[in-house]
Picture 1 (tube, one colour):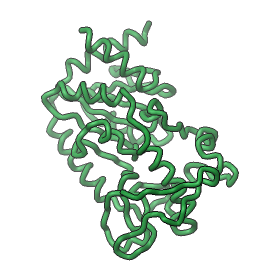
Picture 2 (spheres, helix red, strand yellow; picture 1 turned 135 degrees about the horizontal axis):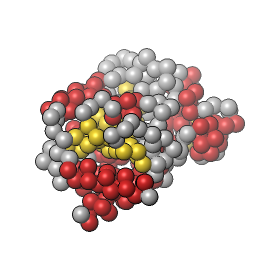
Picture 3 (cartoon, helix red, strand yellow; picture 1 turned 90 degrees about the vertical axis):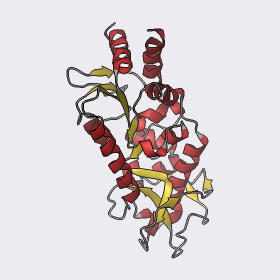
Picture 4 (tube, helix red, strand yellow; picture 1 turned 30 degrees about the horizontal axis):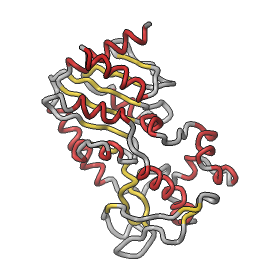
Length: 274
């Protein structure tokens, strides 16, 4: 009963808001069919070849592999790239876009996801801040330049071994191995310029919205890497936290212990019927 009441309250907040902001973590993509990498078991279920090598997500998401074993590195990131390209964002993305389109002010996206699915769902790139970078962009792993370019490579990955062919992306300037423009673990070589420009647009927008009735819808952002959750609480705003496992939030906000798509559909039903 309490959850139903909170869903209705969330719908009222969304309707009454002057501006909406959407903050998303990895849990947002699960309803699109993307793997849940929560814990080693979830990761190894998606990548059994890496369980045999006793490599977990944090160990693989490290730039050292692009030097030591680029076929292993691009097996991991190439598989993710192909999966993100082949996957359509779930209907919840389109519900958010529909809500955003009812407001006089644009909605900004703050996301730790690197898949580009908000843009794929129709949000303008200038309204998206990807704080950890994007798998759809590349940089030189030898740091020969500060260029960041679109990832248009087709990467073949052996499903059994999770290794790529030798035709992985290379820097157009020096021929060295290219890597995704993503902030990895233990990463001192990430080029942050693209994300920095996104951040400046985002912060400028949020500053301009000061004094407006702001509602932040936070989706699938956990506590293991709390970047998104921390960002959501930085503003004079009502936060609607949607998280199946970790929905707790301070008094005055709303926490919904539901998957993203289920929660968005339930809220939208009230939005449409009121």
